[in-house]
Image (tube, rainbow, N blue to C red):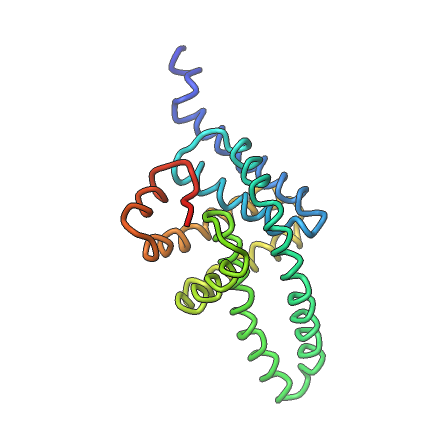
Length: 216
């Protein structure tokens, strides 16, 4: 009986992870409703998933709460910078789609969709960087652009993965209970392989072994 109710056995660890996935995903969706909080909340989710799901740190909701407080100001500024650019790109997408009927319009629409991978990828890298490291905002954008272009295959996969999960969630409301945390976890499989390549040996050990975010 002691083993059955032991919180460290496999069953209760599984239940705890399920609670974390659902709770973090729903909290993410609620906290993103003001729109300007999208970047800090998403950065906090990424950080929490990496620390708690990949590195085994406990107290996911506490980690998530602290990460939001630490990234709130900078994350809101990043969101305010990204929103006008996103609006312009969406407007361009609407224009291209309106001209889809002609052969030239179809070619331009496809080319525009492919080109959108770069700015979308920069935002994905930016969110992860703000969650995992301390950057000045200008340097964070520059580093995100560099990583997005230098690791273009990973960038494309992450963008497509995020897009598909996002569309799936919009079409059926119930995936919001797990899709945000799942997307962060799958994204980390690509990004966390890249980050150590740009860190010293000491910083890499901190990135992998400690509960604290490495500071640069």
